[in-house]
Image (cartoon, rainbow, N blue to C red):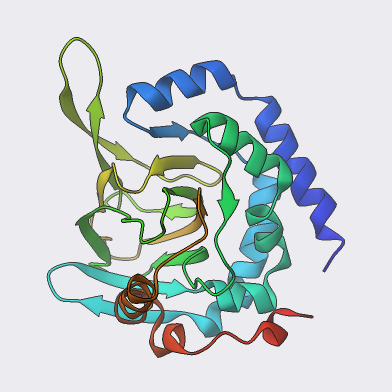
Length: 250
């Protein structure tokens, strides 16, 4: 499906053309490295991503951590094998440059043995949720999270961000965000305390997450801990298995 790459890249370029970078950067700084761009990607681009979401359904791993989260996920390894449009979005040169300019630091893709570098979150059963947490960076540099809304058919399930506002005095405001298709959220994983409220009956929510770093190095102990966390809370035992690059070729 290599023919999708120019379409995805052009869609990203058009999305960026519609953004006031200076104003977005000001908002990002003011909110302690957190920003929301509603309907950043157009529906035709989202539709290409949704086509691959359907292809990845057999790879969905249900997960449950008592008192913290319930939901389902698909890891980067499955995306590498089957989802060229999603992969093209993650690796988009235009997007990477835009994000680097936004945070004012050169950003890098995560290493390909990181199952969380580009993943899908599925909220499809009543009560699916995740409690408050940080996206802690186990890398030697900073880690940034980008969330892209793909499916939002819920009145109850919302991204809740406790945002520290900067001014003469600091205050924390709670923001609830509907992740409508194409909506973009970016934040420094070590700074935003965030959660997802429980899904209601007959509702559905699907989110694409993209991770970028300033340094691709990670110590062996932190690598082991990161993979163990991903195996338990997100992707199942496959997250612990050595990654085979040949599986990503097609």
